[in-house]
Image 1 (tube, rainbow, N blue to C red):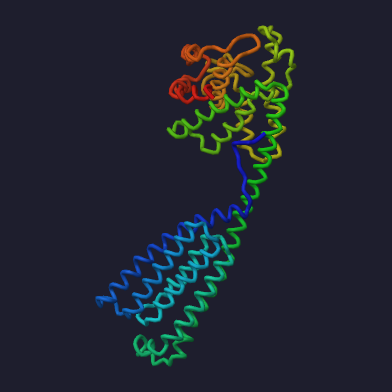
Image 2 (image 1 turned 90 degrees about the horizontal axis):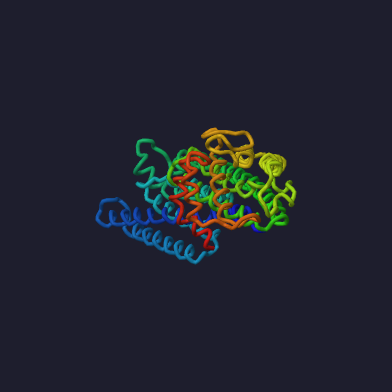
Length: 408
């Protein structure tokens, strides 16, 4: 049986999807570079920047061409690894040529490119970018050494070789150290995320096993029961979505997802009740009804044993609250413990509304399904008695969506 609530994806698929998202982000960096390089080019032409016009205009065109290639390859879903290296090489090349102008020292910009590649979670790309940045800076120091000692370091009386060793060399050591740290950090972050993905995958597999096994067991006992839990769980999901979207609950999104998931098993305890009672075509005797009541306790016990290997205390608590108490009533006349009002967990109050609503709209061995209008009239009468009055109000708000469930 297919589980529609939870999906799984391998590490490779996760990294590929992440890389595509990173490429979208990087394409925005290219756009910013385009704008900056056009400003530099225009500034050089009008004499605002002391930079060769041919170099500035050429680099602007290079940046724009690289951006076009990047966008085209990305649009065609081209090999994402190629895009990563295209970004590294093109941006480092631009900064390299800019630094050949002695008046434009961009040491910080050189290392920013390797830092930005960490977004890919690919240590190979980060290491490659760092090495390229180091070589670029060293080569720039050699190229501008003669001019630098004449223009920028006239009072130091340095030779070009001394300039290379004192400025380029010290900066190079810093950049090598930073590259090593960045690469190690990328490896650690990548492994941490993949480890989380692995844990999630194990949890997903357990969820899928629980869902398919229990629902197949319920289906084996009673196909109508499967239809009931599916419809009721859809109503529960409408409630949780409404509460979340309208900020009417203190529960977070994960807790509400847990409620949706556990709602599938609210009647799982009935697998321990005899078919003669479950399928009885007449009204139950008091003794038989007392046996039926045990399904809440039995269901809680089943789920405790089923979920204990998950090590998910929040899910276990949700399961216990919903399954054990979904037959409690707002006025305290329900079972198994006679809880009253807000002492009943909100998950159980939601389930109570969905469970009774679908039961009344469905055929039973001892009666026909009721008319939809009759069911809503019943809830109006029982507002503040059997059901949480606030949830009954939401039930009426959700009526159009609920009716769609029964049209399918």
